[in-house]
Length: 275
Length: 334
Image (cartoon, helix red, strand yellow):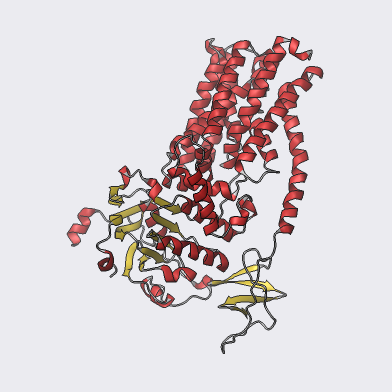
């Protein structure tokens, strides 16, 4: 296990016995996860296995029904140093109802480091410029996001997270539906960040060009951790843990892995009785 | 200028300038969240506020501000819950607001004329104390909308990201709702409660035909709002028509001019966008698949213009009547 390798470095994220229920349905069931500084962790699993909910719970976007999360050693409810965290939410586009330029969207990633009611300082502008350059969109900074392709818009969202110069980057399926060129540009930007010692948690369906960066893999299945250890080499290995069985060429034949159990989450008393 | 010799005209122009400035400023954030009709809803609710003022003999503007703020906060809370019946709940609130208002005005013994002056505006009868209230409230709204634009932009653009950036998303959402409520009551005297949403939304829709960035959209919308409301008031001073309706029609005329220009500009941008630079990658063949026969210099991708067909775990691209599937450094026939 990689924990032995990184046991000395400080703990960045910790979840203890994390449970999440949405609409009475258990999504996460007793997750224990510790991420140390400098780790690049890939969170894999089938649709509905709870990997997206897990990172959203780590960011405080989904309330825990049991258990606790600490970020940089501080309980989530008291955590205020959000400039240390960069988040790329799972989104299809970077657009909204009003046009916004690439520069403006990326500059909003600087908010956690800006002082209230002050204009952008020189360092802010430089960070925004660098973040845009890191994802290979320098020539398009003043263009509207709506004119970009889906993959380029995803890169804008990644640049927005990079602009805050985070110590930890959390990405929720950043490469879903992104063309191969954008994936490569993104992988290069991430590896630069890894070299600087950043901690990265990456939710992914398929790793693609990101695979060489990963040094720890967690596979989720039905809201539980099915595998936690060194990177799995082949897709077949991952499928083994994700209970995928075989390679589906035709999506129509694939079963979804949404937990079919509709019962409420296990209560602590039940667990003790069974244990 | 002979117009400025009439004090009521000066008051009307002052009110128009500040309304024209504040309404699109808040409207930009509403449009950004795709809540363009929220102003309309608050306007409906504010009718009850006006009626309460008339019934109790206090200032209708004051009671309208209070009721509109309460209504806007309730709308925001319902929206945040995100329940399936949220839009129905909003409809109940809107129609309850306007029906309650009409009934209360009847109870207060006020006729249809009084109601009409609030529904469709009566900027030329605005009193000097009302002008001051309008100017101060509108100025506060504009200062907040421009000063807090980085925060408000981030929250409206992507709530989850804003939350992880440490912003108090609920506070900013409520702030926009309260600003919208204040603007509705400010604009009530200028364009009227039924048309206020038009002054919030139409200038934004107009300016975004021609802009690429958020700040330029915001400021251009404010400029368009001032031009429309000023020229509307001046026009209705010479020709005897309702100023509120004139302002809205001028704003709409601006949109009618800007829209085809915007369509043209966007089409030209699309044509200018080049194909992705394509490194030549042709070659190796494996036994169990067919490599595309032609020299395939073009690299398929999101923006390549070929029809993309999801195919199991990858995407095929329709190319001259057959499907190309990416395979390593080349394309296979599928």
